[in-house]
Length: 73
Image 1: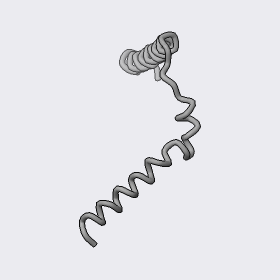
Image 2: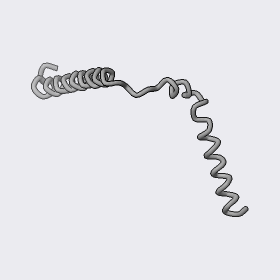
Image 3: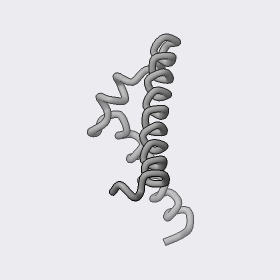
């Protein structure tokens, strides 16, 4: 088998995989996906920021409790 035949076989395999991208399990999700508009983006950033702040506050509270109140446990 020559190099050209091997390369052609590899290229055919890749093309067949890429041809079926939108038809598999995730095809419907890819078809429904869209770029968020400005309002949606702001809402996503706000909710994510609030979540990060809550997790940071919980972590800080746990660290503070473990550092300053270890005798009570």
